[in-house]
Length: 104
Length: 156
Image (tube, rainbow over all chains, first blue to last red):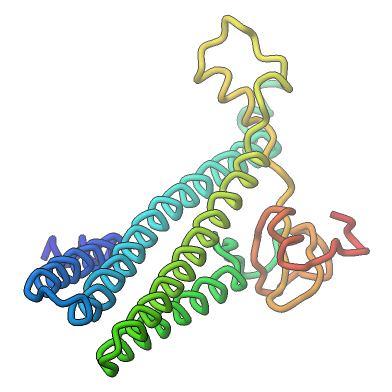
Protein backbone atom coordinates (compact mmCIF):
# COMPACT_ATOMS: atom_id res chain seq x y z
CA UNK A 1 0.00 0.00 0.00
CA UNK A 2 2.77 2.41 0.96
CA UNK A 3 4.63 1.36 -2.17
CA UNK A 4 1.64 2.30 -4.32
CA UNK A 5 1.41 5.68 -2.60
CA UNK A 6 5.11 6.24 -3.19
CA UNK A 7 4.77 5.26 -6.86
CA UNK A 8 1.80 7.61 -7.29
CA UNK A 9 3.56 10.54 -5.63
CA UNK A 10 6.93 9.96 -7.30
CA UNK A 11 5.86 8.56 -10.64
CA UNK A 12 8.37 10.67 -12.58
CA UNK A 13 11.25 9.39 -10.45
CA UNK A 14 9.95 5.81 -10.70
CA UNK A 15 9.79 6.22 -14.48
CA UNK A 16 13.34 7.61 -14.38
CA UNK A 17 14.64 4.54 -12.55
CA UNK A 18 12.77 2.27 -14.96
CA UNK A 19 14.37 3.99 -17.95
CA UNK A 20 17.81 3.87 -16.29
CA UNK A 21 17.35 0.17 -15.49
CA UNK A 22 16.29 -0.60 -19.06
CA UNK A 23 19.22 1.42 -20.37
CA UNK A 24 21.72 -0.51 -18.25
CA UNK A 25 20.09 -3.78 -19.32
CA UNK A 26 20.38 -2.78 -22.99
CA UNK A 27 24.06 -1.89 -22.52
CA UNK A 28 24.77 -5.26 -20.83
CA UNK A 29 22.92 -7.20 -23.55
CA UNK A 30 24.78 -5.19 -26.20
CA UNK A 31 28.11 -5.92 -24.53
CA UNK A 32 27.39 -9.65 -24.47
CA UNK A 33 26.33 -9.53 -28.11
CA UNK A 34 29.47 -7.71 -29.20
CA UNK A 35 31.77 -9.96 -27.18
CA UNK A 36 30.10 -13.05 -28.63
CA UNK A 37 31.44 -12.59 -32.17
CA UNK A 38 34.86 -11.59 -33.56
CA UNK A 39 33.41 -10.08 -36.77
CA UNK A 40 32.82 -6.30 -36.76
CA UNK A 41 29.93 -6.62 -39.22
CA UNK A 42 28.11 -8.86 -36.75
CA UNK A 43 28.98 -6.61 -33.81
CA UNK A 44 27.49 -3.46 -35.32
CA UNK A 45 23.79 -4.36 -34.80
CA UNK A 46 24.54 -4.87 -31.11
CA UNK A 47 26.35 -1.55 -30.99
CA UNK A 48 23.25 0.19 -32.34
CA UNK A 49 20.52 -1.65 -30.41
CA UNK A 50 22.41 -2.24 -27.15
CA UNK A 51 24.88 0.62 -27.10
CA UNK A 52 23.06 3.54 -28.69
CA UNK A 53 19.64 2.33 -27.50
CA UNK A 54 20.97 1.98 -23.95
CA UNK A 55 22.46 5.45 -24.02
CA UNK A 56 19.16 6.85 -25.33
CA UNK A 57 17.27 5.23 -22.43
CA UNK A 58 19.85 6.46 -19.90
CA UNK A 59 19.36 9.97 -21.29
CA UNK A 60 15.59 9.67 -20.88
CA UNK A 61 16.08 8.48 -17.30
CA UNK A 62 18.37 11.38 -16.45
CA UNK A 63 15.92 13.79 -18.10
CA UNK A 64 13.00 12.48 -16.03
CA UNK A 65 14.99 12.62 -12.81
CA UNK A 66 16.25 16.18 -13.34
CA UNK A 67 12.76 17.28 -14.47
CA UNK A 68 11.34 15.93 -11.20
CA UNK A 69 13.90 18.00 -9.27
CA UNK A 70 12.96 21.11 -11.25
CA UNK A 71 9.24 20.50 -10.60
CA UNK A 72 9.96 20.21 -6.87
CA UNK A 73 11.78 23.55 -6.98
CA UNK A 74 8.88 25.12 -8.91
CA UNK A 75 6.40 23.90 -6.27
CA UNK A 76 8.56 25.39 -3.51
CA UNK A 77 8.52 28.74 -5.32
CA UNK A 78 4.71 28.38 -5.54
CA UNK A 79 4.58 27.92 -1.77
CA UNK A 80 6.86 30.90 -1.14
CA UNK A 81 4.73 33.13 -3.36
CA UNK A 82 1.54 31.97 -1.63
CA UNK A 83 3.10 32.76 1.75
CA UNK A 84 4.17 36.23 0.66
CA UNK A 85 0.73 36.99 -0.76
CA UNK A 86 -1.06 35.79 2.36
CA UNK A 87 1.24 37.94 4.52
CA UNK A 88 0.56 40.96 2.32
CA UNK A 89 -3.20 40.43 2.42
CA UNK A 90 -3.06 39.97 6.23
CA UNK A 91 -1.19 43.26 6.54
CA UNK A 92 -3.70 45.04 4.28
CA UNK A 93 -6.79 43.67 6.11
CA UNK A 94 -8.45 45.95 8.74
CA UNK A 95 -7.88 44.93 12.39
CA UNK A 96 -10.64 42.92 14.16
CA UNK A 97 -13.52 44.89 15.78
CA UNK A 98 -12.44 44.12 19.38
CA UNK A 99 -8.96 45.53 18.75
CA UNK A 100 -10.48 48.65 17.13
CA UNK A 101 -12.63 49.23 20.23
CA UNK A 102 -9.55 48.92 22.48
CA UNK A 103 -7.68 51.42 20.34
CA UNK A 104 -10.60 53.87 20.58
CA UNK B 1 -11.61 40.34 -5.95
CA UNK B 2 -9.51 37.92 -7.86
CA UNK B 3 -10.32 36.60 -11.29
CA UNK B 4 -12.34 33.37 -11.53
CA UNK B 5 -11.01 29.84 -11.25
CA UNK B 6 -7.23 30.18 -11.33
CA UNK B 7 -4.46 27.71 -11.87
CA UNK B 8 -0.72 28.13 -11.65
CA UNK B 9 1.33 28.46 -14.78
CA UNK B 10 3.16 25.20 -15.48
CA UNK B 11 6.94 25.08 -15.36
CA UNK B 12 7.26 24.23 -19.04
CA UNK B 13 5.33 26.00 -21.80
CA UNK B 14 3.49 23.97 -24.46
CA UNK B 15 6.23 24.94 -26.91
CA UNK B 16 8.86 23.31 -24.69
CA UNK B 17 6.79 20.12 -24.46
CA UNK B 18 6.31 20.05 -28.24
CA UNK B 19 10.04 20.58 -28.88
CA UNK B 20 11.10 17.82 -26.46
CA UNK B 21 8.51 15.37 -27.79
CA UNK B 22 9.30 15.99 -31.44
CA UNK B 23 13.08 15.79 -31.03
CA UNK B 24 12.87 12.58 -28.99
CA UNK B 25 10.43 11.04 -31.45
CA UNK B 26 12.77 11.89 -34.33
CA UNK B 27 15.68 10.43 -32.34
CA UNK B 28 13.77 7.24 -31.58
CA UNK B 29 12.79 6.90 -35.24
CA UNK B 30 16.43 7.34 -36.33
CA UNK B 31 17.59 4.75 -33.79
CA UNK B 32 14.95 2.23 -34.86
CA UNK B 33 15.79 2.83 -38.53
CA UNK B 34 19.50 2.38 -37.81
CA UNK B 35 18.87 -0.81 -35.81
CA UNK B 36 16.67 -2.25 -38.53
CA UNK B 37 19.02 -1.27 -41.38
CA UNK B 38 22.19 -2.65 -39.76
CA UNK B 39 20.59 -6.08 -39.56
CA UNK B 40 19.10 -5.87 -43.07
CA UNK B 41 22.41 -5.55 -44.93
CA UNK B 42 25.56 -7.70 -45.01
CA UNK B 43 27.84 -4.95 -46.30
CA UNK B 44 30.14 -3.71 -43.52
CA UNK B 45 30.53 -0.20 -44.96
CA UNK B 46 26.75 0.15 -45.26
CA UNK B 47 26.35 -1.02 -41.67
CA UNK B 48 28.83 1.60 -40.50
CA UNK B 49 26.83 4.26 -42.35
CA UNK B 50 23.67 3.17 -40.55
CA UNK B 51 25.47 3.27 -37.21
CA UNK B 52 26.32 6.88 -37.99
CA UNK B 53 22.61 7.55 -38.46
CA UNK B 54 22.00 6.08 -35.00
CA UNK B 55 24.64 8.38 -33.54
CA UNK B 56 22.88 11.33 -35.15
CA UNK B 57 19.65 10.17 -33.52
CA UNK B 58 21.36 10.06 -30.15
CA UNK B 59 22.68 13.60 -30.64
CA UNK B 60 19.19 14.82 -31.57
CA UNK B 61 17.77 13.28 -28.39
CA UNK B 62 20.57 14.83 -26.32
CA UNK B 63 19.91 18.26 -27.82
CA UNK B 64 16.18 17.96 -27.03
CA UNK B 65 16.87 16.91 -23.46
CA UNK B 66 19.37 19.71 -22.85
CA UNK B 67 17.01 22.34 -24.30
CA UNK B 68 14.20 21.04 -22.08
CA UNK B 69 16.30 21.22 -18.92
CA UNK B 70 17.65 24.66 -19.84
CA UNK B 71 14.09 25.94 -20.37
CA UNK B 72 13.13 24.64 -16.92
CA UNK B 73 16.19 26.17 -15.26
CA UNK B 74 15.60 29.49 -16.98
CA UNK B 75 11.93 29.57 -15.90
CA UNK B 76 12.91 28.85 -12.29
CA UNK B 77 15.67 31.46 -12.38
CA UNK B 78 13.32 34.13 -13.74
CA UNK B 79 10.66 33.34 -11.17
CA UNK B 80 13.17 33.33 -8.32
CA UNK B 81 14.51 36.67 -9.51
CA UNK B 82 11.00 38.15 -9.43
CA UNK B 83 10.26 36.73 -5.98
CA UNK B 84 13.54 37.49 -4.26
CA UNK B 85 15.33 40.81 -4.51
CA UNK B 86 19.11 40.78 -4.13
CA UNK B 87 20.10 41.74 -0.53
CA UNK B 88 22.26 44.62 -1.79
CA UNK B 89 19.18 46.21 -3.39
CA UNK B 90 17.34 46.47 -0.06
CA UNK B 91 20.39 47.66 1.88
CA UNK B 92 20.65 44.60 4.09
CA UNK B 93 22.82 45.06 7.15
CA UNK B 94 26.16 43.27 7.06
CA UNK B 95 25.58 42.04 10.62
CA UNK B 96 22.15 40.63 9.84
CA UNK B 97 21.82 36.87 9.90
CA UNK B 98 21.00 35.04 6.70
CA UNK B 99 17.36 34.26 7.63
CA UNK B 100 16.75 37.90 8.57
CA UNK B 101 18.23 39.05 5.29
CA UNK B 102 16.12 36.52 3.42
CA UNK B 103 12.92 37.73 5.08
CA UNK B 104 13.83 41.33 4.41
CA UNK B 105 14.30 40.59 0.74
CA UNK B 106 10.97 38.79 0.37
CA UNK B 107 8.76 41.59 1.58
CA UNK B 108 7.12 42.57 -1.70
CA UNK B 109 5.89 39.83 -4.01
CA UNK B 110 5.47 40.82 -7.67
CA UNK B 111 2.08 41.76 -9.09
CA UNK B 112 0.04 38.71 -10.00
CA UNK B 113 -0.36 38.59 -13.75
CA UNK B 114 -2.93 36.33 -15.37
CA UNK B 115 -4.06 35.30 -18.80
CA UNK B 116 -7.03 33.49 -20.28
CA UNK B 117 -6.30 30.29 -22.20
CA UNK B 118 -5.31 30.92 -25.85
CA UNK B 119 -5.51 34.69 -25.33
CA UNK B 120 -2.89 37.08 -26.66
CA UNK B 121 -2.95 39.49 -23.67
CA UNK B 122 -1.95 39.26 -20.03
CA UNK B 123 -3.64 41.26 -17.26
CA UNK B 124 -3.43 42.23 -13.62
CA UNK B 125 -5.58 39.82 -11.59
CA UNK B 126 -8.06 42.62 -10.77
CA UNK B 127 -8.50 43.66 -14.43
CA UNK B 128 -12.23 43.89 -15.31
CA UNK B 129 -11.60 42.05 -18.58
CA UNK B 130 -10.76 38.76 -16.81
CA UNK B 131 -13.17 38.85 -13.89
CA UNK B 132 -15.04 35.57 -13.60
CA UNK B 133 -13.01 33.90 -16.33
CA UNK B 134 -10.77 30.87 -15.81
CA UNK B 135 -7.24 32.25 -15.86
CA UNK B 136 -3.67 31.05 -15.49
CA UNK B 137 -1.32 33.02 -13.26
CA UNK B 138 2.32 33.52 -14.13
CA UNK B 139 5.22 35.92 -14.05
CA UNK B 140 5.69 38.61 -16.70
CA UNK B 141 8.60 36.98 -18.46
CA UNK B 142 6.67 33.73 -18.90
CA UNK B 143 3.69 35.55 -20.43
CA UNK B 144 6.01 37.45 -22.75
CA UNK B 145 7.81 34.26 -23.79
CA UNK B 146 4.42 32.73 -24.59
CA UNK B 147 3.87 35.61 -27.03
CA UNK B 148 1.36 37.59 -24.93
CA UNK B 149 1.24 41.39 -24.73
CA UNK B 150 0.22 43.59 -21.77
CA UNK B 151 -3.46 44.53 -21.59
CA UNK B 152 -4.24 48.06 -22.65
CA UNK B 153 -6.88 48.50 -19.92
CA UNK B 154 -5.10 47.48 -16.71
CA UNK B 155 -1.56 48.23 -18.04
CA UNK B 156 0.31 45.48 -16.16
